[in-house]
Image (cartoon, rainbow, N blue to C red; front, side, top):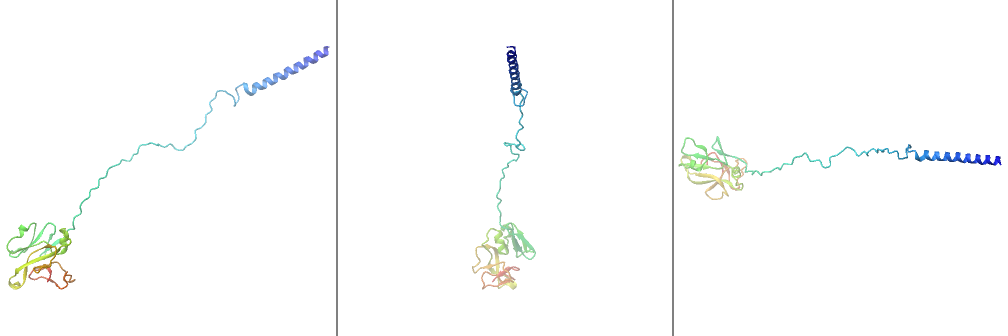
Length: 207
């Protein structure tokens, strides 16, 4: 009987010992809160994902927009010079060459026909077709109107009364002015380009 009691007491102690060990293990695995898996209240910081350098998506532009106004500047005809005697030249767009037949100053640049209206005066507003281009009439030709006769050695020659740019120079009392004696470039191949001695002294004309 005593031996049976001791055996049961030994079994009870063994069971108690095993039960205590199991309880301790369970507390160590999950109940202490001291492990890495448990709820110890610590915030886990996750480093942000590297997205490259920051950019101002809606940054205002630093470029100033300026309205540029383009003005169309009219381009006029090219300038040219009127041959006036043997030494002078006059601006074809603003001046006229005046030949004073009965004056000591035979050639003069003037700005108005009124300054070339004395007896024997011959207004010359062109000396070549280039002057007609300068005056805004590129299809015109330089032409002298002739009338009357000269005196002395020119008594039998018609003399020019005026020279200007005209639509054509085909009438009997007209003479083309400004040809080239070397090229013989008269518009009418039946005419000859000469340097005038009486009709318009010193100028190249087609006769």
